[in-house]
Amino acid sequence: MVVFADRRDAGTRLGERLRDRLGGADAVVVGLPRGGVVVAYEVARALGAPLDVIVVRKLGVPYQPELGFGAIGEGGVRVLNPDIVRLAGVTKEQMAKVEEAEREELTRRAARFRGGRPRVESAGRTVIVVDDGVATGGTARAACRVARAQGAKRVVLAVPVGSPDTMDALREDADEVVCLQTPRDLYAIGAWYHDFPQTSDEQVVELLHRAMRPTGFSGEVEADAAGVPLAGRLTVPEGARGIVVFVHGSGSSRHSPRNRYVAAALNREGLGTLLFDLLTPDEEIDRANVFDIRLLADRLLAVTRWLRGRPEAGGLPLGYFGASTGAAAALWAAAEPDADIAAVVSRGGRPDLAGERLPAVRAPTLLIVGGDDHVVLGLNQGAQQRLRCENRLRIVPGATHLFEEPGALEAVAELARDWFAGHFAAPVRRG
Image (cartoon, rainbow, N blue to C red; front, side):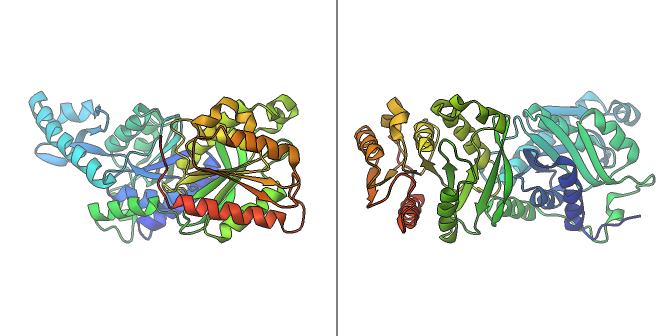
């Protein structure tokens, strides 16, 4: 028999189990208020996933409210237990009265917990529904159905402790059920915790707010580009002011030593970075893909949306650093009306390949070119004339296309650092 110290301990153990089972799935963790959010917070930390609430309300029998005859959730979801309705003799009028009161409370709580923040987008993702325990399962069932109604690709119900019969029944509503303890004689959820205090609304609000704040992260990730998994490395220093997404050129990858050098310099200045592969190994075999700017830009936009959903991003401004053909993809993507990119830097780039997209770019753009890279310098000067956003062309004297000369790459890193740092602090200009 395992008794959890408290909800945090239970969440830590549950997170470890889920990390082993789910791996790098693109997941969002949703906790059932109130106590379930404490467990869910630790699960989200273990998985590096965003945290949200999923608000449902139990419908209690009028003269015995602790006995639920059903539950309701956001999006108009309603779940009834016909056996309890029949045995308790609950009339339609009584059910309607209870539901009306609980619907008002559900709306109030959703607004209170999120504090005006939008719901974390779950469409097309794995949604992990977390509670501190399950007895009858009415609330958990409603939560799973709400997640499904909101577009979840896969629903996982995860709890520290639950009734075995109830957990088996819930497999009809969840794609997977993870439960650490399933005692035959459950009695009460609180009996499986040494410390099981009431959780307040204020605690829930604080945990959700804390989950939104970047706390520092560095590690390998698998970016989801509209269903295509792309390997990458994400580094976000604690208290980061923004994140720069690196877009490499033809024949390169996330392992580019030049991009890694610049990324490390940005990290030292408190800026986050994401280096990722634009194509899968199989796609790279076809060299036409390497020069397909539209394809690369679409991948970049998809990864940008994925990054915004990561807890490490925490609403931080994003920028693009493009090299060679990657610069064209960065500018193409930045020209999208909803891209919301704070700044773009091009290193030895080919902005001319963005063609007709250049006048639509709104993000402040810095073009860095080697003084001895004559052909590319001319292409950048021509592209600059087509840009309508704030822009600047900076030439590194004596540098060639790869900036291999002594001090050349250091100059690039300094220029990029100053450009991003200055524009991450300012609002994005829209035209």
